[in-house]
Amino acid sequence: MSRNIEPNKTLTKRAMKAELLDAETEYKLAVAWRDNRDEAALHRLITAYMRLAVSMAMKFKRYSVSQQDLIQEAGVGLMKAAEKFDPDRGFRFSTYAQWWIKAAMQEFVMRNWSMVRTGTTTSQKSLFFNLKRVQAKIEREALQSGEALSLAEKDVLIAEEIGVPLRDVEMMQGRMSGGDFSLNAPQSSDEDTREWMDTIEDTSPQSAEVVEREQDLLTMRGWINKAMDALNDREKYIISQRKMADEARTLESIGKELKLSKERVRQIEAVALEKLRKRLETDVGKAAKVLIDA
Image 1 (tube, rainbow, N blue to C red):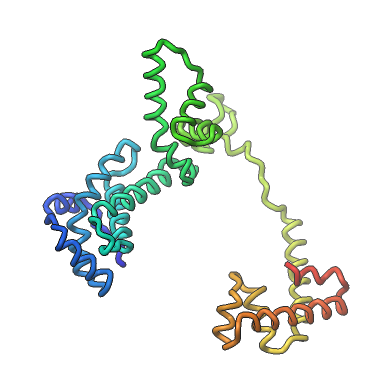
Image 2 (tube, rainbow, N blue to C red):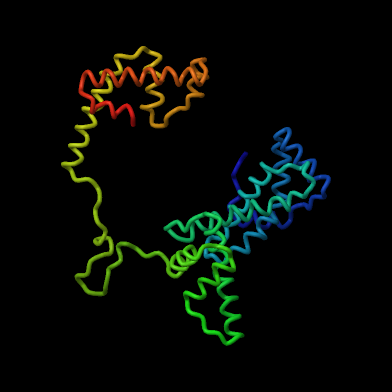
């Protein structure tokens, strides 16, 4: 399914002029897309409801992100809704699409609000989008009753109101209290002051450590390559795919390729690993067999 959303003001104008679908037409378009992957039906369905996406995007403009990007993300959410919508469930597409549109824009806002990820758990999302509103409500009620609340007491009430752990409220308060700043910014106004970057410890390995590690890797690779001579071709292939590939393949996928059952591949792998262990013990000592257990 295409994800291209028209990235300019024309999209908004066209959305406002799009046709309004009745329930019967909407159902036919949704069925045509679901059953026949009819691109024309999908386009008509999406175009008709871009008005809804644009309208919902407007409600997120207070988060200081590009309105154009918000509309783009709202359109992406709309297309995800069209992909998963089941017209036989008996409800309108607009009702179903609202959740997907809102979820897409929330994800976008939280990704772009700060360079440091705020988090995307249900608790963190609820806090991010409701914290200021709930806090204002609590402060307003306290003012009306003449009660003076400390910051800690406000956080407790916010946690109870939203239904999230207190520690999450405290974390989000800290994240939302200030924006990002550059690590190249000076620590003070003094002429010879350091940048904040200079205070970060360099944890990268030193050159001597790098050379030593690379040498160890070459040695271990030699041990493994020599031990592999003890295996037949099928065993070598399974071990290479299961233990030496960047992404280990599953027993099931290898079994399909070799026309073997998943259990048979597992048995061959176990036999091959045992052969490697014995060969390593013989050639380079018992300590080397830990390489096979990794």
